[in-house]
Length: 186
Image (cartoon, rainbow, N blue to C red):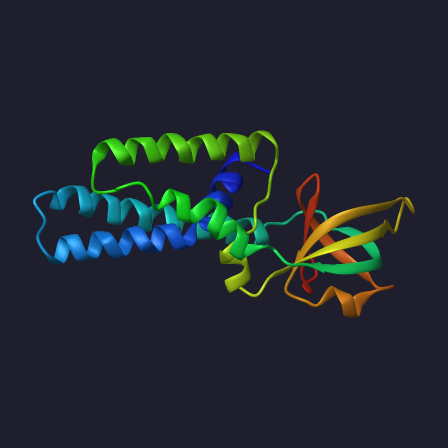
C-alpha cells in the first residue's frame, strides 16, 4: 500500500473525530472566538485533507491495475468492529482540547505515530468511511485461478461475497493481507 493511500485510509478511518473537530471549529468561528484564525486554519486543513483523502481513495480504486482472478472457496463476513474501533481509537482522541496549540501538537504526535505504525505494518484498520460507502469486509478462502494456490485473505467488496462462493472474481491488491473487489472489469 502506498504511503499516501495509507495516510488517506487512516485519515478517513477517523471520520467521526474530524466531524467533531469541524463542529467545534464552526461553533468557535460563529462565536467569534479570540483565536478565530486557529479555528479557520483547522477547519480548512481538515477539509483539504478530507478532499485529498477521498481523491486518493477514488483514484486508487479507478487506476488501471492488473486484476488477479481468484475463485472463492469459502466466505465469512467480518464485522469491521467499527463500534470497538471508535471506542478504542476515536473517543480517547477526543480527550485532546483542539482549541489549545499544545494539545493539537500532542494530538499530531499521536496521529503521526499511528500513521507510522499503520504504514510500517501495512495495517488496514476498520474504516467507517468504507462502511458508509457500502463496502463490507469478508474473510475468504480463495484459490488463484492460474497457480491453483489456496490462500486466505480479507476482501473488501460492495457485493455480498457469500453469494459468490465457487465463482471467479477480479481483485486488486491493497496490501499483503487485503484485496479490493467490485463487479467492474479491470
